[in-house]
Image (cartoon, rainbow, N blue to C red; front, side):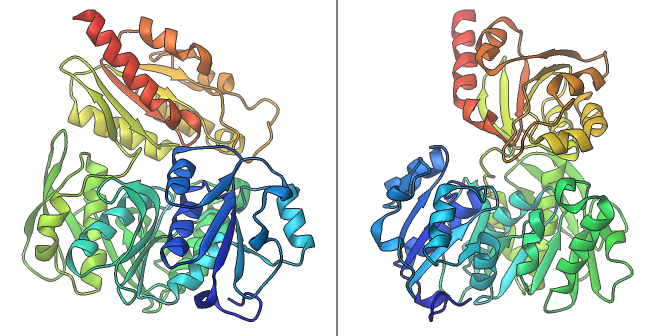
Amino acid sequence: MQVGKGTIQDITRVYFLGIGGIGMSALARYFKHYGAQVAGYDLTESAITTALQAEGVSVHYTDDEALIPEPFRVPSPGTLIVYTPAVPLDNREVRYLQGAGHVLHKRAEVLGHIAARHRTLAIAGTHGKTTTSTMLAHVLHCTIGCNAILGGIGLNAGSNLVLGAPSAPLVVEADEYDRSFLQLSPEVSVVTAVAADHLDICGNLSNLERAFQEFAERNTQQRIITHVQARYVFERMELGITTYGLRDEADYRASDVELHTQSSTFTLHRPQGDPVRLSVGVPGEYNVENAVACVAAAEAIGVPAETLREHLATFRGVQRRFEVRYTSPRVVYIDDYAHHPDEIRALIAAARAVYPDRDVTGIFQPHLYTRTRDLANDFARALSGLDTLLLLPIYPARELPIEGVTSKMLLELVPHNVKKMLVQPESLDSVLKALPIDLLLTMGAGSIGLLAGKIARILQEKETNYA
């Protein structure tokens, strides 16, 4: 990537448009670590932007070109401007920087050039990629050392960035949105799932599958590690295919699974080597599959399962991925990023397996009008696994409303055996205080994560008052 007359190694200043995004903030931390001056704009303050400011990054929240720090305003060989597609093109700062002569680079493009300097392991998939990539980064960091640029905050590292020696391998979360993962040419490619999503961009499932095929073709070894249920996407390609999962036909598979409240234990079977008993420090059958994918990827670069055993057991998970926010003998509260029907279905199944015989109440905030429209029936079926549903308004993110697409529309599709109600965010407190809670799940990729601390306090106060 050329920046003026320089290359990515010569960058001394980086300005981020949308710096609070989980992927953008990881890049901000990366460049800050290597000595660049870093600043940025975001629409709203968040825990991520607050943390960045504490780390010495200048951040502002008003779309105003006058707030862009002076050193970033004029193009120079050492200055890089990075943007996320979530920032609209009519943004004042975007227009100003383009008018000043800057070339704006997508986050995916910058990540691709960073990855080109490393032996890269890329984890893709419509769900499961954040936990799997973070788990892989953890076990490699603890064994051979690695770098990682992730799509979630790992609870072990407390960050979405893991740093090792510059020559160490790089683990990246490879995002299918906007075909971003086609900027990567990894040595190890993992696909955790291929399910209908981002249809506003791809149009249909066939186009999404083709994007994943193109991602697989970019593997430098012409090989792909894929969940056994996604194998069909790659079967007609001239690739070496390694499958993983719980099915007997998978090359890497788990059997004799034991699920606990804070961990899972299983026997790993693999193409080479004896079966080995492993534990992973997160609950849920889907996390067992994530662990199997993690081991397959590590073994692909010569790190055997036996070496990983101790560190797989110490993996604590990722923020907002089956994250237990409050627990007592009477009440359990779990917060999760689940925003796709498959993720919701897996979350509810995991919660019921780990906490059997509890009534499950779910608070769900749909994310995007297009996703709600395109997957409405699938959402309704997934949410039918709850005993009680509290449905919040749709979180629009980058989208404008679509006529007829509302949470009320979705609620009407949920079967009547589920107790259900629409709830406005401002009335959620009073509803939760009045509602009997046994096991509570909050689900969604929007602003619902910001409510988790308040919800945990409400549940704790209810317990105190009950006592």
